[in-house]
Length: 569
Image (cartoon, rainbow, N blue to C red; front, side):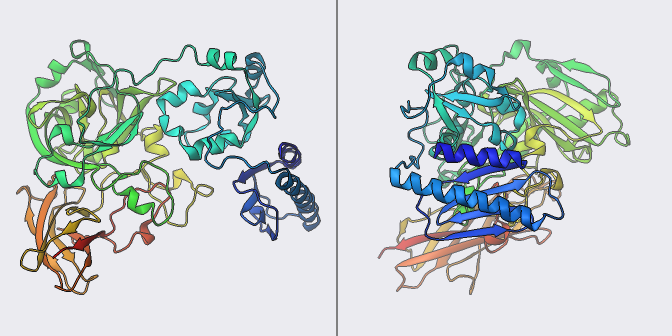
């Protein structure tokens, strides 16, 4: 198979093509050649080769395509036959990634180090494996710059920071680029200077359910959310993109600069000299309820349930007050965005970053806070100590923690999380066709609701023929939830819930709504499916199904929330 790969790669390089292949190695019983203008594919049962032109020509000469396809088809058929007859199947779960493979050549670290550019091919090591990832570099979801840092060396120091890479799927993908081995001694040398960036993470409440440990991301059991209108700090979901930074409160400084403003540095004490405001705001991750979306079609991202959301009281100085004190005018035409950077940094020391429109940040009624307290106490380290931004009504990704700088600007933040993540796309867009520049960064969130108690799959005993349900509802942009409807018969009849919420008027209703409803069920029923939907003061409501809002990142899932419960007598 290695020779087949080499031959195909050489052929494709000579024609300025990119070769990719996907799992499933079976002797061909059915071969179909796809020959459309944009993608050339060969299918052999569940094995597929396809290649894509970097620059599409409007016209491909038919004889060129036919000859190229014929050569590739011949190579594929022969190679697959030999591969099948030799019985050399790769592990589909990636369990052999990094394990010494005696059938492949050995290399030294010096040899690997020479392959540190696209010109010389990009080699990396993992365990005792050597991998030529040149053809993958351009497709790396985190961008070429980050993956090229590992060129000519081990990926393991970087994967310690992004442990999400160590999954069977990613390891199996890596193993497809395997070209050789290094010795056990060299493997130890390659990782000898590694320091664990997560070695000083804070302790977390054991009730939190992690979706990833490095970086740490976790949510509480959903039933705990509805026990308190204000989510206890220890049970508030945690969304970290990078290792938690070490912060010394005494030496902490906030850098403020940009267009139309006096550049300055403020300490935490300086921030606390501004008038203190307290508000209730619900913070929600864009990926909340992603797990449901992945049941329709696979998506990329943390497998969040319905509890990546929380409601708290936040206290601090208004961003408006701080910036106006430094000379910023509300109507300065050169100012379009306000950028934030955190103290948490990645492998190349690039900090987490995001931005919000100036219309939000410089609106005195927008209530953007530089917060130093959560639920009446100083921020905890996981929630941004000593200072974070609270942008009420806006997606959690813009509420930057461990705030290190603010910049007033005419352009949006260039950060990865602003430009290449947290954007919504059509259900028809996939990872081959996505154009990140075509969609705006998420700011305000759509209306959403969820059933928290009982949980999906629970067994419940009706009380006088009714089942009590509890949950939350929320709408971004300061909208107020005005109604929550629940059905037990797939929408034929609906029951209106009782709401618990603050009295703040829209468009400054930043908190969530808790709701309760008793829903009658048939005495003959043994299993019931409940649906919930919310309506806000602008009469925005939720879509009925996930199918029409599915997107490749699995974000913004605000379809009806559904659970099935068993009825006991």
